[in-house]
Every structure is written in structure tokens, then in C-alpha cells.
Image (cartoon, rainbow, N blue to C red; front, side):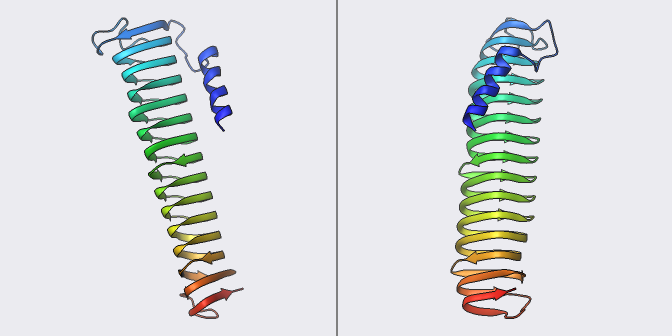
Length: 250
């Protein structure tokens, strides 16, 4: 995964395929949005050094306290606060806050990392949030995907609003749609169909096709599933509504 991200960033920096503006400036120096070498409406293809800098499309390397692009960004953006209003391809690491409002491909990190559309790659922050679909790896203290998630999601709290495919490992794991794969945590919950394995102190599903292993296992509909634990609850009561140690429906 990391090799692919490195290669992607290097390609963006060297080739500049993401910029449509042939008149992009090669360098930008900025104290504020109003005090910078080139105006905010210009695109940059090369190097930006900012205290607080704003440009349209950016391809290359941005270093500063606050880096902002009102268009698309390709390359690497490193600062305290990084904001791209369009799409981003490459690295975006904001020590405090990193946000891309469009699609993101690459690596995004910081204390808070946020993407406003679909995300492909690696998102590593204390708080991760993706408004669209996610494909890749999302570890943090709190990791949130508003769409579907495919890959690995980890943290003290992990939350996927859509469907989940892969590994979800945290203290509290929540999937509002279907889960296909593995949930490992203190508390695991899949609101709809769990097709796979839940390992935790307490496990809860709308429908289980697979294995629930924990102290307390609860399923509204156990359908082709097995529960192993101290208390096993199957609300549809076919064949048993409650059994200690083992409950099943095949």
C-alpha cells in the first residue's frame, strides 16, 4: 500500500497530469492570501512555501502553516492546516487538520483528517472522516465512513454508515448496513446482515450468517449462523430463542 502511495505521489510531482492550466507558476511564496508572490487565482506547478497561502490548482510540493487550494491538488501538501476544495492525488498531511472536499487518492493524515467525497488509499489521524465510499486502510482513535467501506477500519470507535467489507477492529465497531468479513472489538454491531465473524464481549446483528463469539451474542434473525457465549439470543426463536454456551440455526 505505502509503495503504491509513494509511486503515485512521485508520478503526480514529475508528470503534472492533474493540472489543466499550462500557465501555472513554478513557485509561490506567501505570507497571507493577499501578500504572496502570485495571486490566489493562479495555479502553481512546482514549490509553494506558505505562512498562509492560497492558489487554484496545485501540482508539486506545498510546505507551510496553512496551505489552501481552491481547485485540485496533485503531489504533497505538508503543514499545520491543509485544505483542498477540489480533488487530491498524493500526500496531504496536516499536523492539526487536513481536508479535501472532493475525491481523494493517496495518503491523508493529521489530528483530524476529512474527505468530502470518495477515498482510496490510507487515512491516518486521531479522527478520520470520509463522507463518501472508502477503499483502503483507515486507522485512528475515531474512524468514520459515511458511505460503503472496503478494507480495514480501526480505532477506539469505528463507524460505517453503509456496507462494510473486510476487517473492522476497535473498542466499539458499528456498521449501519451489511458486514461481510470480520468484526473484532469489545462491542460489535451490524444493523443488517452479518456475513462472517464477530469476536467481542458483546455482539449484535440484525441477521447473522456466520459466527458470533462473545460473552453475550444477540441476533434478531439467526439464519445459517452459530452463537457461542455465555448468553446467546436469537429473536426469531428458530429453533431456540435463548441458549447458554451454544445456539444455532441452520
